[in-house]
Image (cartoon, rainbow, N blue to C red):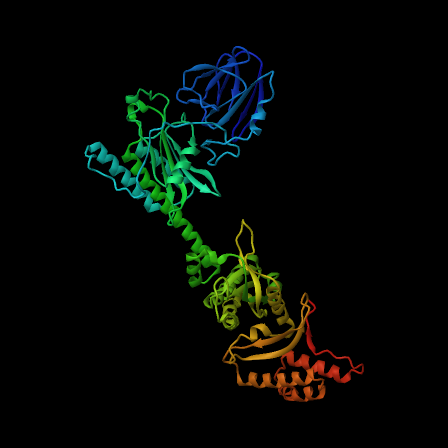
Length: 612
């Protein structure tokens, strides 16, 4: 009796074979038991196992073209039968088979042994390295050569035969077509692998990519279904170390008396990026009709090298395009170019930034009235306007949340005028907001929607605030939280833009601002001085009202409540003439009246308390 375990990308199962012959393959036939292997790289009837002497087993290779390879380096050519001891392990296609005499252990124990894999097997229907690649010591012949460098010109001096010239021209034509596409992905890489096989008359071609320090088969093509899909990690490692195209010329092996039966010849060319770093490799091998075809020639290797350069250019261009698109999605074009040149700027660090939060007023209520499709189109148009103003001023759009935006300045690159940039962007957002809404008057009607913006400056931890799966570059910390609180305060204050004292301190002196007083915010232990900010074209009336308000605020903070009210009397008179008093002025009048009426003597100069 034999215990047998098979393992591949779709199977992991154990069997017991009691007596007689056991035929294995995709659809095995023969006078005996059948072992079905779900592996497209395995022949229909690939092998036969039966009992040998003393617990050994006889293995017959019934396939027409696939060699069975053993863990100890032995191989069983097609049409051959040999006796092997147990326990043992052999590989067919992308499937590992472990066999154990019924009197000894369990074949599954082989899987737990720690080994160094030198050959990886691959199933064509699933283009990735198996999680537990079979361990097999597969050796190519030692007649190995390297091209001198990665830019060898094709030498036609000894290639004058018409068939050779035709081969070169056809290869160049196909490479030009691939260069025109310069794409990436499984389909494109399969086309590369096919071109590799056809132009060098190989039996298998693969595109290997280096991903997270692991080699992944991202494209594969075989000349027929009987070709086992595998590659030697040892040879690939040598190519990585040399950074040169490797090929095996078998021309003088017969002269040395070595048989060419069952030998394979390989060609491997590294795929390099613009910085000469290896990001992958083209791998091809010839195992059929070696006697007639011979090994890999220098010309074949040079053509493969050209093809590898094409693949490298496609990968680099794709990465550059994606990087540029990713950067420009959140950063202004000027900043995106800088990041493209130096991605290390995105590394996490503490940095002084100016953070901005914006949020739309009344949009939630509006979304309960309009159709979802209309809401989406309206929101997209408004967000496009707001985002454009942020990027015009060199800001980074960190995130969108519903109808809100988080943006920042002075990171990842320093901007000496980052506060002014943020305020300019905010004021431009406010100025253009009515025009955008006017375009959608057929949906909005008289429904009022507005925009509130809060800005704060301070030190934050800046870096990837997302995850490994989803990148999001942005800030974290109290500076950001306070900017959010300032945005929320615009509802109570009835103002479109509120900034902190830290931001006000870094604004040019000519910027129109109004000191609104001290405010307490949830999660912030100390009161914060807050300011209204206007653009340089602030009206003279606003300037007059600003002077009155700030003077009254000084009286209020000095407990001169009567003087505070008297200072604001002109505003009360204007209200009687039909002009509205803004919310901060009304709040200051009310608080001053409370101060006059208070008999307890308790007083707080904090004018604003943001409880939400």
